[in-house]
Amino acid sequence: MKHLIILFCVAIAMPMRAQEPSLTELFAQMEAVKIHQDSIDSSTLMAVYDYRCMTQDAEGETVVDGMRLCLQVGTHCTRCFPYRKFERDMSSENRNYMDGYFMDDEEPNTLTTESYCFMPEVWRNYPEGKMTVRDAIPPFIYEAQEALESIRWKLSEDTLTVCGYLCKKATCELHGRKWTAYYSEDIPTTAGPWKLCGLPGLIVEAECEGGIHSFTLTDIQRTATTIYLESSAITNKTSGKNLIQNRNKVFGSRLYIKDPLYYAHESMKTADKVFCKNGQLINGYYINDKPHAYQALELK
Image (cartoon, rainbow, N blue to C red):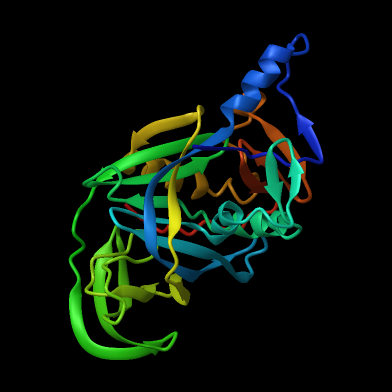
């Protein structure tokens, strides 16, 4: 088991209290936001994707946000999560250490970029027959488990070459959005980015109707890596349906782009906060002071 304390600071804001917290209380707060990593599988293939989202900034100008995703394909399960975290877990070289958390010089900038993307972490077939989703509506961190359900794909003979692989086309509807995907039978796995999966080959490209969300494969690595399951003492259990509804309600509000914490001012008093350039880290999740308009991956 690995333990990482997700903290980096310019200044740490402690909860407002009538008196200063005791040393015991301080250690309790630090322990609560500590992320625990349990090894649950070993991957046989690792795919890297570029994720892109078309949206608008606070002035209504069109912007394209993006991040890199890592898809680990294991013997029993898969994990899709930020590539930044994969690099951090797999290497300890050239790291700056602070309070048990390490990051390289680029990680604060990457956290800022990723904060626009609202991308949950997804474990498929963990536990067996289910999908685990970990996401945050800061300061709250949530974990949801859903039963694995087959996606109803419509296969086509149309082809496209992506990242050097000849791919076939397939379409589906998932959580209210229509998707077009291209998969390669030369990479024998049914896996894909985010929750997209179930085709007779790795999904190498996918785009939803209107081009708002897209995933494109950029790299394949066939080295063995450990697949971790993350948890923390402040994680709240919920259902997949409730997580989607709450996320869309909070981030989809017209108030969000004006004040990204409009819904959480009272609960922020007990959250672990780290003030950073152009934002703050709340219980390990970066909140940008100037957010972009939310584009839901899942409409329902």
